[in-house]
Image 1 (spheres, rainbow, N blue to C red):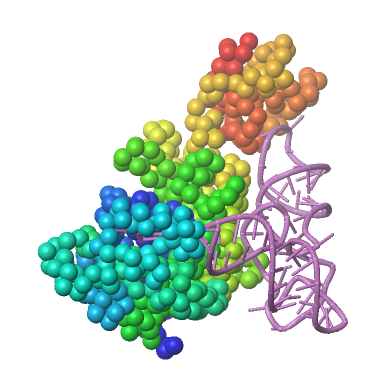
Image 2: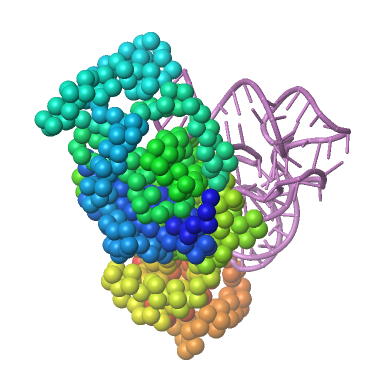
Length: 509
RNA sequence: GGCCCGUUCGUCUAGCUGGUUAGGACGCAAGAUUUUCAUUCUUGAAAUCAGGGGUUCGAAUCCCCUACGGGCUACCA
C-alpha cells in the first residue's frame, strides 16, 4: 500500500433524481477528499441506455452545487482524465474486456434471454445453492468454453450478439479489507460469471467501474453498502487485469433506512410521510409527478448537509451543529457507523431551526424578499424585517415567514370556529368597539404604549383582560397563534388594526 | 432459498485498547415564563447494551451460537 495521492469519486448513474442517500455518499467522498487534501471527481455512469433519464445529470450537478459539495474534476468541468461520462468512454472498455478473454479470465457467451431463463428455472427446481451462471453451470451453456474455437470466431465475426463474462473461479476464498467493516471474506463458489461487456457494446457497471477507477487513479472507493456483495468481483477484476498493487481501498457506507417500517429509504417515502427525500424538487417528465425537495421545502443547504453528515457518522464529541468547514476538519472514515441509519424527519426540522437561529433578521429578510416578490405580496424590506423579528423564534422554515404569518400581510378571511365559540360572546362587540375608540385616539401606536393604554382603560372599566385580549387576537389573526397581540398591531399599524376590528365586528356580530 | 453485512433509550448516537450511576441530541412528559401559539428555562421518564452461552476477579466492550434486521442474488446501477 503506497502513499498514494488521495483521489475519490462520486459516480451516480443518471437514472433519475439523486436521493438524499446518494447526496450523503457524495458528501462523505467530498469530506474525505478535502480532509486529506485530495481530489474529488464526479463521474457519470450512464452505461445503461435503457434507464437513462433526461435531465438527471443536470439535476445531480445542481443538487451538489446547492449543497456546496464541489468537485474539482469531472463532468461539466473536465480534467486530466476526461471524458468523465462513461458513454463517452465506450471505446476504452472493450479492449480491457478482450484482454481478460485473452488472459483466460473472461469468455464469450451467446446464450439468449430464453436460454438463461431456462437455466435459472432448472437450477431452482433442483434447489441448487447457486442458481446463476457460474463455474458449476457454464459448461452446459453456449459460450467459448463449450463451442469449438472456430465457431466462436465465426459467430463474433458475423456480428452475432455476444456478451463477455468473467470466469469466476470455482472455489476460492476472496478476502479484502473494508475501511469500515474490516475484513470481508467470500467464497467464489457463491459468486457468478458476471457479464462484464454487454451485447449492445457497453460495459456493465462492474467492468466500467474498475477500469475507470484504475485509469483515473482513484485511491479510495467510498460507496453505499449495496455494493458490498459485488466487491469481491471487483477485487478479482483488479487482480485479473494485473492492477492489484493499484487497487483502491474500499469503504462501504451504511444505508439510510426509512423512518417507519422496513427497508431502505426510497423515492416514495418522502411524500408518503411528509418530508422530502430529494435535495431539490424533481418533476418526472413521463408521469408529471412531482417529488418535493429540501430546497423548496425551505431547508437551508447547510442544515441539510449537517443532517446528512450525522446519519451514520459523528465527530465523537457532543457537538451536533457543524459547518462544512468543521465537517471537513473532523471527518474520518473510522467514525462511520456500520449499521444502517433510520432517518428521522423530526430531527431534521430541529437542525433547520438551529440554522435559522444562527442567522440575523437582516439575513433572513434578504433571503425572504425574492419569495415575497414572487408571490406579489406588496410589502417592503423593512416591513418584512419587522415581521421576521416578531416571529423568528417560532419559525422553522423560511416559507413559514409567509404562510404561517399571513395575518401580517392581509386581514384574516376566516376565524377559527372553536375559538369564536369559546371567546366571542354577547358583550364582545361592545367591548371591541370601545377599545377601538381608545386606540383611535392614540398618537403613539407602539406595542408598549398600546398595551399601557388599553390595559388602563380595561382596568378603569373593571373589565378582565382575558376576554378583551382573546377577542382582539381573533380579530387580528383569526386564530390563536402569533406573537404578542400589541406587537402585531404595531407592525400592521393603526389603520389596519381598526379595519380588522371592524371586519370582525361585521362578520362575527 | 443462497451469500454478505449488521444489532446500545422510540430515533440518531457516545462508549473504540474490558472496571462508567451506560453519556448526549431529537422526540415525549411535567413545571416555570408567555392572558394566545411558539420560543426559552428547569425537571423527568426512556436502553438489564437483541437473546443465550463462554473467557475473566470483572464484559455493552473479547469468542461462539441463535434470533432478528438490512443488502445483494439482471446483458440495472
